[in-house]
Length: 138
Ligand code: HEM
Image 1 (cartoon, rainbow, N blue to C red):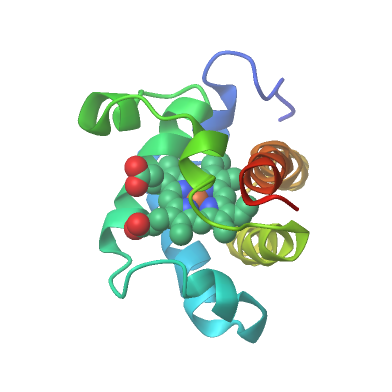
Image 2 (cartoon, rainbow, N blue to C red; image 1 turned 180 degrees about the horizontal axis):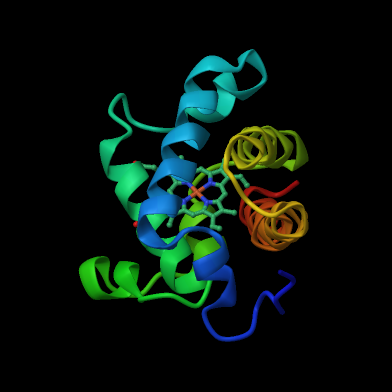
């Protein structure tokens, strides 16, 4: 069934709700741990990914039109400005997106939703690169 992703909570439901998002994020960080291409990005994170896992799943919930779990639990966040503490260039963004692409491919998502979700994630990833470049002077 085709739905208009981005309207209401259609994307959140297509992702399988919070349980589906937690599975996506678990797979995402597993790829970040395993893929050589992602080693540099992995090294920006602390040894334990437990907090990052919970925060990203909660963020994606609200971002995809579901419950605003990140805001409820952790408060407000601006994604580009938060990430500007690290030098994140196009290569780091591509490595992050590669982990997402592989994780998305493992989910039982409709093909059009898988394509939509990866395209949507590119938008904040590019804003992070812009904000990081502005801050770190490249
Ligand atoms: C562009 C490549 C990206 C890199 C290299 C990156 C890297 C990081 C790192 C190192 C952390 C800190 C983890 C920790 O301290 O446990 C983090 C946290 C986070 N990232 Fe990213 N990230 C990227 C893209 C994104 C995107 C596109 C989103 C949203 C769609 C996102 C959402 C988050 C959230 C919600 C947190 C937790 C914030 C907090 O600790 O309060 N990230 N990211």
